[in-house]
Every structure is written in structure tokens, then in C-alpha cells.
Length: 269
Image 1: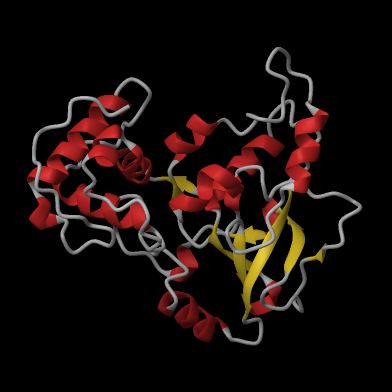
Image 2: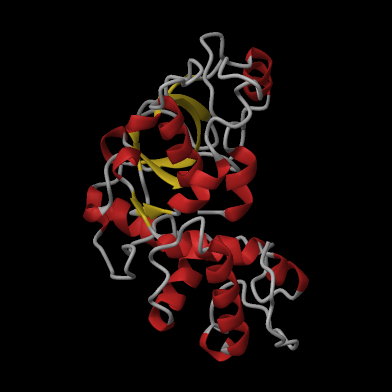
């Protein structure tokens, strides 16, 4: 969801220890508190993530020794010490029946799901620390849905940009889908092109920023769905150059920055 969170928090908020002072997540956890739960208990607030960006980060990076597949216990200990204690990590809202709905950290959570389910998970069992932004367990479903939408805590579009109902969101992180355009716009925002001549303001903290941009791009360039290692460079260049040549189409998006230099970028990474 928030690009400032994903890269830095992949393992920072992940590993739960038996000696922690944090309690297990339950219906009574108050706003502003952190609790421990299993990845499978978290309800996504969006239908898709950017799988290509997740694959680039490699969930196991940082917890294995570089020369072997043995676990690096020192790295694990460091990650435990760095665990997140604020909403700048895996964050959620407690809804009806005590269900925790993710509002941030979907990419981190899915990465950790992959880690827990790979052959050598380095002992990671899927436990996560979740920062509780609010507790609305006293709301009925209709009230809760309205609350989540009015606070921009959910992204109710599928990977093709079509509107979906709140009830259509996946109920487990394992069931989340892929939106290649979300990955693409993350690549565009982080590219040398955008860093040197920014059309997307990288400091903008609007929720679902890359989804907004990706959804707009789909309307004009519906040919990026097969994003992969081989075409990532060319797709990123093409998307960035299209945006700077057609700024009027994107000027209403959050994070838009007017670019006066419309020279085509030739190298993205």
C-alpha cells in the first residue's frame, strides 16, 4: 500500500518470540497497541499486490548466510530487535467478530507468507506483529465497510481496474492476486528516470498511490500485463516516457508533479 513502508519493513516487523511482552491479537486489543497473530488470520484490504516487486526482494534475503542455506541466527536476532512498534509496518483495524483487516503492509505480509511456506523457512512460522490503528469490533458489517471506505483503508478495484464489493476481498493473504501495474508503477517511481526528472512525487504518502497510477495507466496502455524480468526495463521506460508526454491525463492523480523537461528517458535502472 504505502511505498515508504514496503522495502524497509520486510523483516523488521516479522518474527515473533516466545519471550515477547506483546499479547496475542484478540477482539479487545485497543487502538495504538501492537499484538501478535498468524499471517493466516489477517484479512487483506485489497485484492492484489505487485508480485513482481515482491519477487525482486526475495523473502529469504537477510536471514540466510550468503554462502549457504543455513539460517543466520545473528540476522534473526537483529530482526527481532528491530521489530516495528508503530503503524509504519504491518497495520490493521479490528472489525466485526474480532477480524483484523490489513490497511498497510500487504506486500510485507505476503512476502512473509512466502517465507513461511518455502522449504527452508529458517524456523519462521508465520507469526507477525500487527499495529492496531483502530478497534471497530462494535460496528456491524455495514458500518464497518463504510468506515473503512471513508478512511481510504481499502482498495476496491481488481487487477483490471474494475470496481469490486468489500465482500469480494480475499479473506486470507494466501488468496491475494497480482496486479502487474502496481509493480510497474513502483518501478517507475523508483527509476533513475523519475529520480532525475520526477513526475511522481516519491514523498507522497497517499494510500494506494501506485494503484491509483497503475489504474490510470491501464486505461491508455493495456499491454503491460506480462511484466517479467526480461521486459521490466523496457516497460518501465515506456511507461515513464508515456506519462511525461501525456501529463494532462495524469495531472489529477495524487503525487503528480509537473515535468517541464520532456526529453525521453533512456535508462531506467
